[in-house]
Picture 1 (cartoon, rainbow, N blue to C red):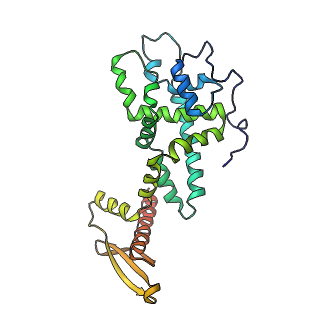
Picture 2: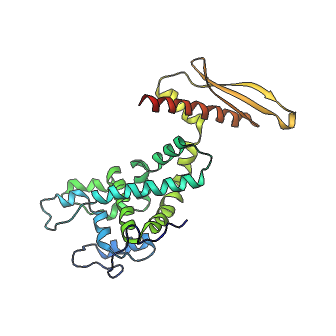
Picture 3: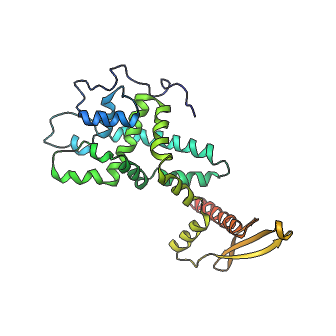
Amino acid sequence: MAFGSSRSFGGSSERAAGSCDTSCNLSAETVEYVTNLLGEAGNNMLLYQTALTHRSFVHNPLTQESLESNQRLEFLGDSVLGLLISDYLFRNFPASAEGELSSTRAKIVNSRSLAGFARTLALGNHIILGESPDHQNIRGSESALADAFESLIGAIYLDKGLQKAYDFVIRHIIEHVNFNSIVAAEHNYKSRLIEYTQSHHLPPPLYTVLAEAGAEHAKTFTVTVSCSEQIIGTGTARRKKDAEQLAAKEAMEKIEEKSGAEN
């Protein structure tokens, strides 16, 4: 997928690729780390320094340098990541309704998932922290890792453009082993319905074959799902399991629609 000119949005700065000028204090190890993540040298390494700078460094009284933390880049990266994941889900799951797409995206871009992706990259090793030993546990913090990951995406977008940011998301989120498990879990409507009934202290869903039709080799099953003796979904398919999933899907759509209306 191509996203148009990288200079239309973001755009890279004209400076020596992969270099740090006098305002950039990244170690050679971190410069090499960023280069390996990108698959090429960065144009503006100061952006990546900002992406990796935790607010504890900026607010540390022992720090002499005047540096910006990654909070603003995290704000930008959050939006860029949301767009890229939305685009991918929209193109690759054409049968999914808006509510399903939104729910799947939310589970991919939440702090827990992003921190997991960041840990795979050993991103915590390169977060720039304050000198206080009290701050060292930040390297493993879910929120710090998630913020740094989103900030890094924001930096890539500004430095290299939207297509390079998308390439990074493909490599380190969509091709990550957890991505498919997140999506699969989100589309397992029976599991979602069980989670809903448990969290709301309701009886477990009950599936009943309402009808069977067709010849033995081409039979279809109509299944209902009920809760508290009320039918909340119906599905028809060639296999009972598929019909149950469709019934659970209809039930979840009704539940989410009702919840949306109440909010």
